[in-house]
Every structure is written in C-alpha cells, then in structure tokens.
Image (cartoon, rainbow, N blue to C red; front, side):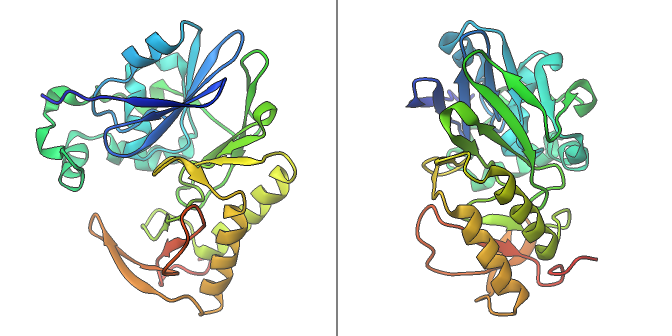
Length: 273
C-alpha cells in the first residue's frame, strides 16, 4: 500500500497549493466563514485528512473538469458539497472506472506501488451538484466566480478569485493544452471560447494558477493560446507528432518557454463540424 504525502505551500494568506501523487495540483481557498477546495486530485491516497487539518470551516469542492487527475479525489467529501459541470459526465463516467484508473499507473512515478486500497471510492456524478458559468461562492472576504471555457472538455470551467486578482485555469488553457482527444472541441471552437473568456476576465486578474507543474503560468497564457490557434488554423503550426494514452495528435510549437501557451491538437478536427 502506498503512503501518499501531499506537499503544501502558501500561494497567499488565503490560498494553499497542494501537490498530489500524479503531479496534479489542488488549491485550498479559505475565507472568514467557509472554504473551497479547487480540484481534488486523482484519488490516489486520501486528501481529506489533510484538508481537515488545514481548515475547520465548512468546505465545498469545485472541480474544473471531469478528468481522472482532477475529479477522482472528490468522492472523499459529502456528495452535496461537490460541484462539477455535468457537461463532463461523458468523461467522468469513463475515467472513474477501476479499469481506467489502474491503466494510468504505468505513466506515473511510483505507480507500481499503488494498490486498490489506495484509490478513493467511485461515486456517480449524479450525486454531485451542477456547476455553471455565473455561479459564485462567497467564503467571507473572498469569493470564487465560475466561467465556462469549453475546448479541452465540453464542461471545462475556470475559477476567478476577484479579491486576490487570481484565476485558476485548470486544463482549459496551459503550457501543453490537450485538444486532440475525441471528446475535445475543434481548434476553431476552442479559439472562440478563449476569446470570450479573455474578454470576460479583462482587467480582473494579475496571477494565473496552473493545475500541473510548479503551479505558475504567464499572465499572457490565454493570448499565447489564441495565437497558437491562429497558427494552426492558418496551417503554420510546427505539427510535431505526439501520443498519449492511445491517442495521437500534433504539438503546435516546439521550444515554448515555461508558463507560456501551447496546444496538442487533432489535425482532423481543426474546424467546427
């Protein structure tokens, strides 16, 4: 059985970054009255005891999307406190299976140490609350606002903490944005999503939090990915072959600076169907 350690660091007085087993990141945001956990990790090892040590305030869990490395730890928490955009039910239903969860262990450092006892329980997405653009969670002195950004998945959302002038983009926009799987939207549609998100968030943030790596992204990462979309649409991307989990795509650019945008895309799904 694995002994999973969740390393933490303070992003600010009210935000704690949590490092999980398979390199994914979570964020605990604590207000004067309540707290939220933004994403819940892969559900390898049990994060709830850590959260209980970090805060004794009433807690909700808000998920950026339905992928295994973001949503599976949420089953540790009471079902009425977990929120996800149910547009991602089609992904979650596949990713929550024991077979799928076990299949990813081979790509994780230390994955060979994981046993079935290390996995959090599987629960139905029907037990959770729906999460939509326009939802707002007031924690007392700090709040979380939800914005849709379909592309990586249909139900991907980003989370703005306006009092901190900080936004968590999840996997909706990062330095290696997956847009090549069969459930992802086209490059054309993703570009539209990013442009709309950029307009809605204009002037509202200074800091961008990532869900992988060191947790940091350039403030211009949305502009970066819009430019990468333009290159793909114009047929000017470098188009480097890439494979992951049985899926194949093309990396748009090579040599991207850390924290800046890039996209892995499907050459057969560049334009809207």
